[in-house]
Image (cartoon, rainbow, N blue to C red; front, side, top):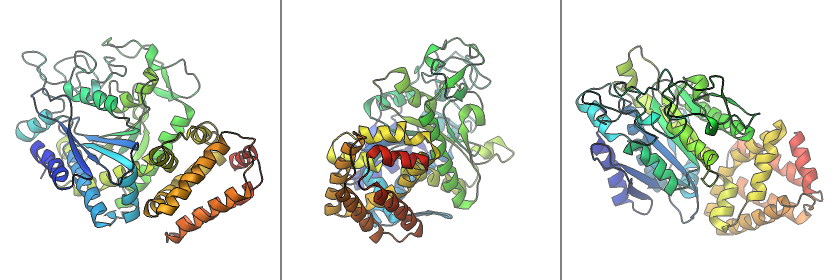
Length: 477
């Protein structure tokens, strides 16, 4: 029913051997406690470099058997669909051939199905409710919870985080004392991961930071770097509220809600989105909080948005909730959620600018993150662009002339957004409208047509106006 560690590795090996142009299997730097090799698979197509990267990870907790299988199946689904030029359908949720093409040619998709192979092997052969890794802590006590072992408020205890080496939520002897969690740190050090997902069971949640405290967006002085760690005591001060940039909170919420919507489309399951602390319980040392915290603890680190899924409902029995007799439907939900997250990890502007042109799009990014995100009208404009970026990328990836035109237009837009007093020329608008017409000619969706018409309206109004005036109109909605 469920794949062994060897079978999960075999899927990656087969894909890398038979499709080396789009699949690369990589051994991670740290073997497990019991000396097992741990592998990740990189999936990407096309020729563009310097892409945004996503890491999908499963199996941190040994008894959560279905998520590593779902990730392995997603590997097969993506490669097969791309090579055959088809889409993917999970129940009532469809992803078109264009969706898959754009994912594969604009992202580096990293998958690590089984982060804790020793634990999985033990579950499948000895104890089907085993949670941690297989570290010998004392003569009688085994196991560190590798999802409590990361360097984010490590060693601060909660109802589900303990310093007792005989408990299955034991934090370990130090941050990253375990090879399985160290692989996450070192992988993020070696690769600029933009979006991270840790898939768990059970419950039906789409989660994001923070886990150790409730989130607030007004007081930057309240942040995890000031908290005492390794105390083996509860969070101090107990009323601490963790700061998050308002624009990051908006992004986490927007992305999580879209994932929830796409999972619901599969077969009507209603996942709940929110922070780990608010939706589940208080945690410390978790992977999704850690990857997001890296750039805050050290400004030289790449910024990574960290998410977590809790897949599948509680059945009334823990064992069948963690590994149901037939997890097929839950895996469909999970795969749809992962593709939804991948889609929202794409940034057409960064792909065209960074991957194709090799230039900075900082001025456009600043307008998005510092201005548009602050008003309902601006957030509406962001959502509009995110809806149309897949068909835009699909069009330019298929047509070299459109690719060149998109690159030229982006260079012009970068210059305009860098000088708010600059005037939008009639020629700028004319070229932008022509690109939209080319995109619409390749699409059949009525929603796309409506969205492109909305953008046409904004473009036509921009002609002859200062960039500042155009932005103010968008911000006003």
